Image (cartoon, rainbow, N blue to C red; front, side, top):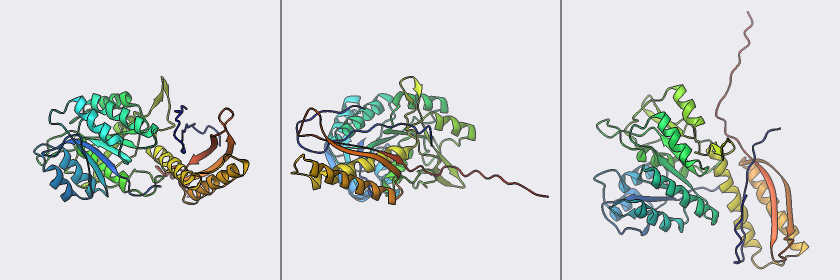
Length: 354
């Protein structure tokens, strides 16, 4: 776990995670970086509906900003902050848009590029923003018709608990495969619509997609989930998420499933900012005394109890508040908590008596 040291007074946070070997925030805002028919490149525009998005950016001739906005709002997004990418669409153009959105209060990021260098730049932007107390995730898609093995390699290159790679790509009106931006946008909208971060994404219906370019077998889904890819399927004409997975599959060269479930990082991004905002509002001009530290501990416990009552976490422990050993103006708050796990499978065993 790393912490950045700042001089500005405030409440700062860091987290780490460990796998257990022995026994929210509603209405997320989505940031979009995409090419558009019109609008000023590199300028953040807040949009609360598809019609407003078309008025600001026009309608696409090739899938881009308006296609993403249509799917975001169709799947439950309430607010979008969009930044047009310059027509050249080079890496630097996307980085400019990411930088604009890094300063905005968004919780989910989407872009219209399947280029791996652009998606890696998006990962870096998301990580930097999250380290700066603007926690967020990114949802990206693969190339048109990208095979399972290539998708797993793409996820391996991203390898971040804050990046979700969705597959397969969708199809256009003539059933031709297009890149994965539509599928990614639909999933991002579904995530934004969830008020409870502990509810698993698996089973969420995705609206507005014309179809999928591939139908995965059970073996394909196993490979994708284990490889850090969130699979989507179509059953009887209904498109839905199979299981919400992040691209984080390893730490260094060691396989690591600690951050595999998407709900884990969503819960962290619900708990930590809530505590940080609560302490900031109640202890803005407090003294670093034993009495103040006792009050801080009480407030932390109250917030954690609230999260536990809402079944966002299942337990917490080791809540300690102390003065920093080297800086008497710093108060150190430490605690552990256990995230609530989603129900992905039900195993039935029948004992038949004849």
